[in-house]
Picture 1: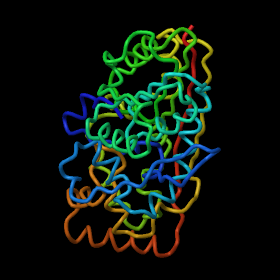
Picture 2 (picture 1 turned 180 degrees about the vertical axis):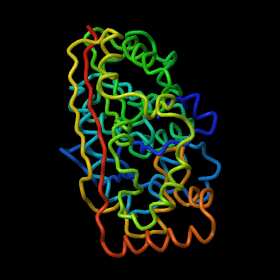
Picture 3 (picture 1 turned 135 degrees about the vertical axis):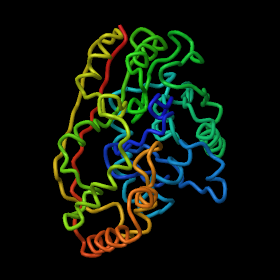
Picture 4 (picture 1 turned 60 degrees about the vertical axis):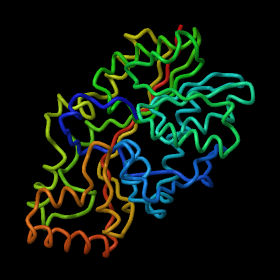
Length: 340
């Protein structure tokens, strides 16, 4: 993730998720086509001292629950592999991972760049970069890793034409000037360099969704669902960097920046049933959809009276206990391009 958008500085609370799906994290022992994931995170009493980006990545997107983290690990590994496959990473490459977070894509790229290559971890969060550095040292790969604190719109810590690959996953949703970010990607790439990104298209989920919450059937408390959703919306869609773009905008910004050989893969789902991330209500309400949003528990406290909250939670617990599926409405895209 990268530089917070201006709306975020005004306490923006967006209902959209970071990956266009349920909260996810990754574990070391989950692999897809041979690429390692990351070790489970242990945070102890340090969570409160971390910046909001690190707090979310390392804790509140899965409430620190191993079951939630493990259930979503395969999905997250698929996003990583989709980015790296499209990047055509080769031995000896220098790869820049923008908005690296806890290094999902960056660590996965190390095998591809080989002993003679290098991976540059870039993020606006000093805490997340410190976590990545710690893991790299523990894994014995620190000498093949560099770390740059920067946002996507300003990669001035990376020299012109100095990298072979730029990767990014779920970052542009936090960037106000997305056109400027694409210009920076183009600048740092060498001729022939590749860009490969993944982004959720949260606009689709908001406009095509049914106005529900958590994908659960909560029609009996629809009035309360509407109130709770109000905690996640403070600016109009067109002013919200998480929602004011779609896949066609990504293509346009990439083309305008100078990229060629553009390929975009898009997938949308409407009302597709699947298991909820957890059937434990206490865990579920401790999660947040993205770093700028409150946890569900915070939203309930903010928007409902005590009696309304008891009624809402009674129905939510019953829905989870009954094994009701969570119906997902989401869209996501992979985009790749080449710097001529």
